[in-house]
Image (spheres, rainbow, N blue to C red):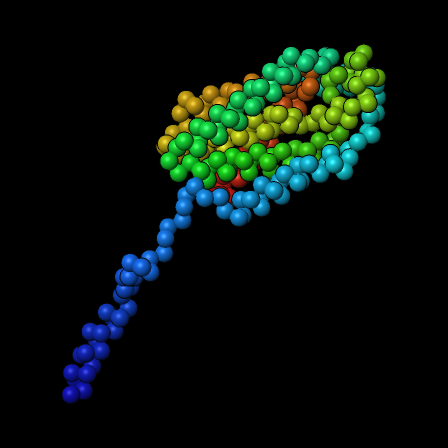
Length: 238
C-alpha cells in the first residue's frame, strides 16, 4: 500500500509543477504598441519645462562683455564665420529643420510598430533641447555678430550671448540619430532615408553658420549633444 502511495506522488508532483493554460477569458491582453504611456508624457513634459526654464528665469542674461568683441580672441577655425546676421540663411535653416522633423516623424509613424519610436524622437528632441539651453545659459558665448560693427545694436538681444552650442544643430542631430536607430530596428537597416535625414541635419548646421548665427565649434558641439541625446534615449526606451 505504501509502495503504491509513493508511486502516485512520484507521478503527480512533476505534473503539478507544469504551467497550466489560462482560460481564454483570463488571458492578459498584449499591450498596444502604439499607445503613449504615462511615463512618456511625464518625460516629455519634464524635458519641456527644463528647456524653457533658462529663458523664463533669465539665466545667463546680461552677460555681454564686449560690443564689438575682438575676433583675434577666437580660435582660428571659428574666425571665418564672423559676419553680420543673414536672415535668408537663418530662415533656410528653420525650414530645413522643420522639414527634417516632419519627415522623420511621419516616416516613422507610418511603419508597423513605429508609434513608440515617434515618441522616442520627441523625447530625444526635448531632452537634447533642455541640455542645450542650460549649457547656452552657463557658457554665455557671444554670437558671430558680436564681433562685427553691428555688435552695439545686437548687444541688447540676450539671444546674442547664447551661441554655444547650436540649438538647431543639437535638435537636428538628436532627431536624426533617433530616426537612424528607429529605421535600423524597424526595417533592419537605416537605409537611404536615414542617410538623407543625417545629411539634412548637417545642412542645418551649415546654414546656421552661413546665417552668422553660430561658429563651427558651436555646431560641432550641438551635433555631439544631439547624437548623444538621441542614442541615450533610444538605449533607455528600447
